[in-house]
Length: 160
Image (cartoon, rainbow, N blue to C red; front, side):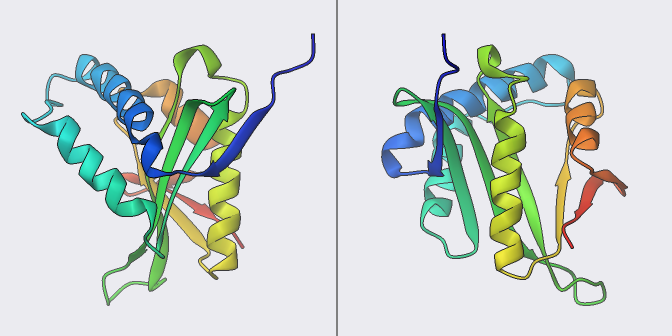
């Protein structure tokens, strides 16, 4: 049986429900991982607004991975301005990445990050920063395997 064909594309407003479901699942795991992580009342509609805002922004990239019309992963990446006393002046900030549990370890997250990295390179942005929770060892391993290195509390990837 041939491997299923996974499509990668920019998110559309119709993708918000499955994106919110993926984000809620990711955050439930995070809440379970550390008692200090507690979602505020109204977190899901707030994240919906946050994600919707980034769909059509010039300096944001909200991408999805889909299989047979079903969203199985997403990535939210944006261009951020650094503090004026630090270089580089602009960097990519990877806000969120989630893949449905039954499709993890198949290269979907890696491909979403690759596509985001290509988008940043075309915009002449040379770095990506992100942060993850300390208890998330599989997340840390994933980011290190992609070439990210510890930098403060965030991770840094040179794209040059």
